[in-house]
Image (cartoon, rainbow, N blue to C red):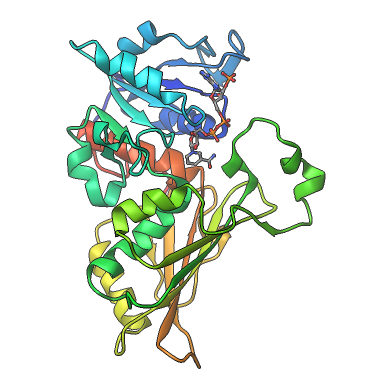
Length: 323
Ligand SMILES: NC(=O)c1ccc[n+]([C@@H]2O[C@H](COP(=O)([O-])OP(=O)(O)OC[C@H]3O[C@@H](n4cnc5c(N)ncnc54)[C@H](OP(=O)(O)O)[C@@H]3O)[C@@H](O)[C@H]2O)c1
């Protein structure tokens, strides 16, 4: 594909974990020209990209871009969206990586949900795209086709055991994320089925019977979700694998394994998600076990954001991502 790097893009919150990953992908993207990368704490410092230093956040500068990526902490995207979209006239398109405008946030009506493989066509025309959360990306891409096609027993509980590397918590220092607290350890958190990502998942799946238990994995990046799925009589792993393979046949960022469950190393450092499924023996009702592996900063954040950028620009979904 013949392209020029002439689409002006800006990254707000570029020194954070997702911001760094977005910056890396955009630097190598054949259609993107990086106009600015913001950081309050490192303004004036080099980004490592030729000719680009970090600058203080500046909404006026963002107005001159075609597309702006908001890689900010929770709650901090709202003023940017209100300022950039609220003035009328020519506004940049916004890809918001925060939870501020996702389903269940109370502000979801302002945005199109950027679960790319499902809503790509709507993303193409959206002024504001709410990029999905990391855990929900894995849960929804694996479970959505199964719930929609009746391959889940709605009367029994679906259990999602998920583990994320430490970058999932962001770069701001926290005592519970110190090396000495995390290394050589493994723990559950967000107990009681109350993690905020559940609102996002339930908004898409409906009020299904689901239990989501996240864990902190002592690695820097990567998410592994192991899902215990109650299925109706007659449904097995082959049927689930077949449905995924059909639904995602033309999707370069989704791999459906022919056998076994994926491992973290199948996906870390890529923008791809890997899905696998097995039958479970000796359970009272039929059960399948799903495995989902992806990089929280790749498909779970920056990779999917760049797929949404490609949708806005009407480019192939795999342009500039690592799949
Ligand atoms: N980490 C993940 O795996 C992941 C995955 C999916 C989605 N997300 C979502 O993506 C967003 C960013 O996450 P992250 O992990 O990259 O966070 P992070 O590492 O904490 O980075 C936040 C960035 O925003 C800047 N910033 C902080 N407060 C600001 C403010 N008030 N105004 C302007 N800039 C500000 C920070 O730099 P300065 O302080 O120098 O300005 C930094 O560059 C979060 O909302 C998170 O929920 C994260």
